[in-house]
Length: 147
Image 1 (cartoon, rainbow, N blue to C red):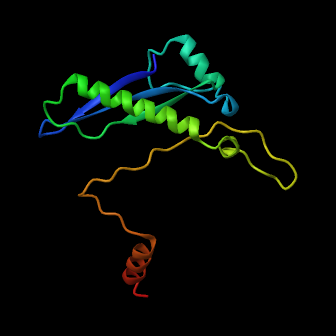
Image 2 (image 1 turned 90 degrees about the horizontal axis):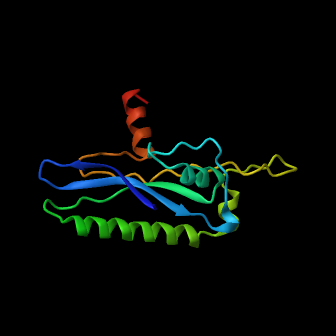
């Protein structure tokens, strides 16, 4: 198993998103053990969990974009399979020397051992969300303080 669906969310207009997890093959030169890993999928089999903990597999969560109401199961499955293929290709194309530095630190003399990285998904903003740049916040704060 390489893809597991965890949930779906239906919007008021009938459109929906699907969320789940991909289990990606780690490049052999970028294996990072995660002995305390806990999967988002509660029914994960022991061999897959062991592979993730040893670093040969990586669990990456995903959420699709909105599917229109009435989208067929075949289209949803095909889209998610394409997303999986893209995620696997992106992981393999990462520059291994850079990937291997994630989570390490330098104390002035030695490099620490690599700690399993935590990758955060890029935020998705809806049209009704307003985000201010730091300069806007600074101006707002100074104005409110009368400075």
